Image 1: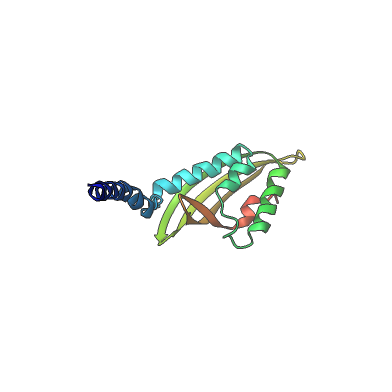
Image 2: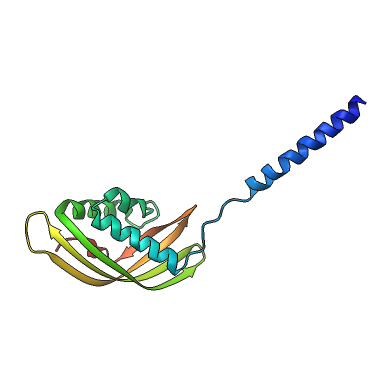
Length: 152
């Protein structure tokens, strides 16, 4: 009788752990990258610029995967330090996906007011971003031309 009860208990314990094992094996996959995801990222980037939030700006980038990431970080720190206010409009032109990376083409308009009281700088340029899957989120790993984020 004891061996039967032990076998039933073992079977119940085994069955109870099956869903947990199955859930552990299924890693959550990030949402597929599409125009909506690109637009969301661009809106967040625009909000970070206009809010003058370096923390929010850098949270959108994977600087470790970005070529010359530390240099880009210095450039952005300098840009934010030299500007009093920033207005930006990032208009999505095109997206293309290649595996766990995607390219985003953008028409970007920006007005940057220098801290030193100089004239407002206006820019209108096409930017190209590369984003990569970073676990649960997509992050920017490249932007060209980087000179867009620098006062002249």
